[in-house]
Length: 426
Image (spheres, rainbow, N blue to C red):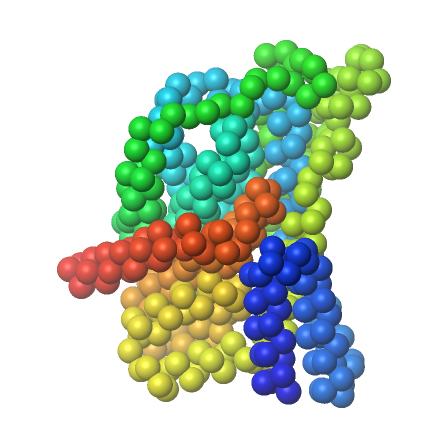
């Protein structure tokens, strides 16, 4: 059974990677793969009740992420409908792509540490549509945004779901993880940035024509209000989680409701046609549901590997075969480029005991770095990558050719930096 499920999973990923040659939408492939995996798992196991309960657990986790994704994308669309991003784009005066990519990289890195890598990617990729007219340039910037967002999320407890898992589980503490992983995460981002800036050279920034949809104008008050409110909601979601201990999706939905009410109040005296174009209901129709469906399929497919203990089996095999912790964790990071890093980290947390490996030890901090940044190597390796893939229609093969090498360079450079830093400080 395990061999059959593994083969189907590999074939599903291969079909997603070859979306353009096959001319089959990746969302359809992901859903078919998830359906086949769960169906075969149920039939071959012979215990439909147990499998059904496991599917319910996986669906609950998947739904939380999807609700969060939909909420964040809708907030961004509302801000965009009001031309709120003009607050930022009007202040960016650089005329060279090489300068712009440094600015975008650092903003993404630090914003991701405050928000999370998924929300940051949605915001920054949406922002690029306001700054860059050429789709090739936007795709390249989207790839760098994915790397910077994952790097920025790895060094804070609220920046990446895997670091959050380790933080909640007691494997890392806030001050220690920020102090120990910050430099490695910064190196992870700066190496690809330096190479990219050199390649771009003095190429000029080609901005899109500044025209509102269907001639729709918004006042400075409306732009500033919706931008500040939307960004404040996104920033306060981690605070909401830490105060209430409720999942982040509840915070984003709560904020979405507040933004909806605010929009209705601001536009309550306006004519219906203009009001309809600016409402949150309109924004809901503009989000990319195809990428949301793809996200559902991928997460449900990976969940089968988690429930059948295929991932934990691989981790155990690595422990006995390789032996060295640093190499094992490096491999875990590389595997997270193909398989979701959440079950990989969960398997690591189950394999190693806190009594043997106490909080803030080398193992846990290195896992936080590798699992958090390794997903950048492939477009489907992280939530940020999947979001960028949907927002900019990025091809798997294009990303592998143009971005994966840069991400791998940054990943290895940051890993080396952390190991050297650890040796010097311990």
